Length: 126
Image (cartoon, rainbow, N blue to C red; front, side, top):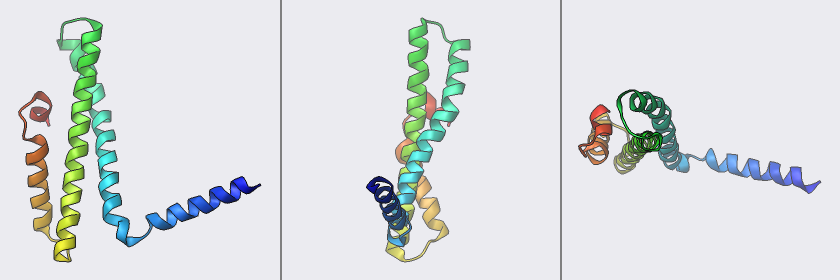
């Protein structure tokens, strides 16, 4: 019965690592990236599906391709924005030793410019 003991040890080790303060910023960045991707897909997929089938002409394959492309683009953009935003906030806090409101503003401006700076349909709607 070494299986359950090994699994408990592994689970304990992973939880112990995740609770350490030195990994907090990196985990926040990764969690934000994941949450941005999931939220982007959850929001865009139903909207793109309805709008594409109501207002777009073409074959079923073309419509599904458009839905997937819009969902992927929106999900990727939100994930990249959150990754950039959280990463810049953590970097500024690490450099200055404390968190300031200007860090939030600067991180949002840079992240928005990098991610949403392109002029396309998805960014225009966001």
